[in-house]
Image (tube, rainbow, N blue to C red; front, top):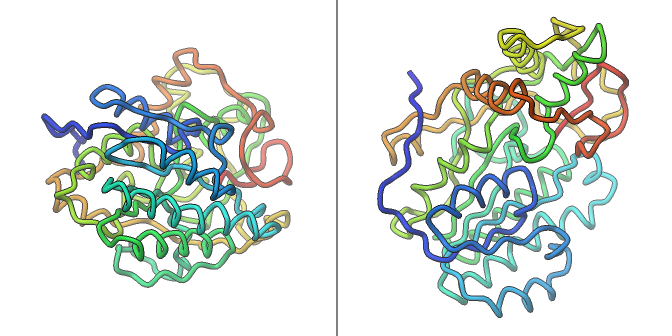
Length: 328
């Protein structure tokens, strides 16, 4: 049975530099660590990962004990059409950040993705499973992992899946807004992974901040797995339980192969196993359903501003009203 994670007592990471502090995950981490540490946050506008010389100049002038890189080019199809930028941001930049941290004797935590896997398994992927990415996005993220750990095996790579949270619109916000506007909504029913709440990730990272924790690859995710359709249906069920008015109450099913606008190949199964983390902490991440219900109750049903899919949602173009394309 999954239990809610608790924070380790008395753990102060010192000064923390967060790259990607303006993003969905970066903002959650910044808020969490800002309670106990001095935090320096950089948004994309303040620090461009594609500019490696700029990275070196800016970061070498700072003093910090820990760096977390939550920035990446995550638009899967955009990576496919612009591989140069994808590899610059997702592969080369993490290597540079790792080198800077090594020079300073700082711990480095690099955020990666479930898309490093090919999706051929039908049971949760463990850290030691072979990575075989299907897309430029996955290839660039895997190379980023490899560069980071080649610089220092004590650096840490944290793989995540299907991230949602309050700081930028995600699939949950999109499906709810579609259900408010349309009588029919659809989502992919044959692609499986784990929805993961940014607030839970920020908490899960806490025990990994200490230098005494070994480096290498770690999987961080909520518990369980589902399809995009199941994810969306649960979100709508939670909205209805909170008394929200929806035009669509059921999420219809479409197949991944029906998504003609997709350019890159997607893995169909990428649930992440978290036993390694559970052995370290003695805690099991809460079930994705509980996390989604929490998000709906605290950030949607209680008057949080719903943002439409076209208002800043980083997803490939294509699809129409009521049909999910993707939020990578």
